[in-house]
Length: 113
Length: 115
Image 1 (cartoon, rainbow over the protein chains, first blue to last red):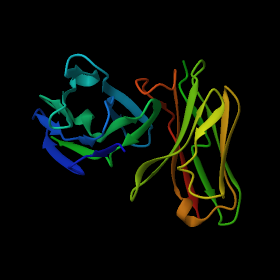
Image 2 (image 1 turned 90 degrees about the vertical axis):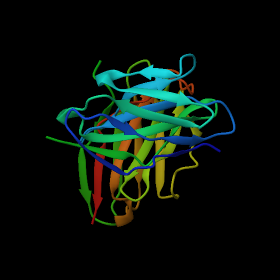
Image 3 (image 1 turned 90 degrees about the horizontal axis):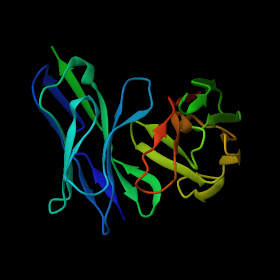
């Protein structure tokens, strides 16, 4: 069975600093991986996805993530964060051949001036 | 495209009352999902439809919960009777094909409070 672990529940960081949000997954089969962002009082929005091919995936708002099969990780990175990046970030893995996703518990990113 | 539309945005009800949450998926999308989000349990999949047919309802907590999708443009999630522990944000999402590589598009959620 698939599962997703987000190691940090909260990550405080100063504006313009780099950030990495960690995600590890477990699965006995090939998976598709996603990062979503949730701003306050809104639904989740897709940031980026890994389906196949290049292990470095670029998404919206300057975020990128690297798929590492040997470490079963899919960490999210941004070289320089803005106040507007303050939100909760969710890593997700697809479940089998169907489209329902298994989500991690989320990481709250707080960007301070 | 208007995106996934959920109503109401907020619902406050008393224990024992029936609650109905509504969702209009993105036009042309074949799959629809209901998720529940709480602080304690995070995002949990309740039920998943493909072409209006329920595929996986293993996440529905108990018989008090039911979901329907009478047509491709409308779904409901009903709780009868409601209990305080049902308080959560309920999200509806849709995807184009329902395949595992198809991303989900979420609505803004319904915040349910049961007193």
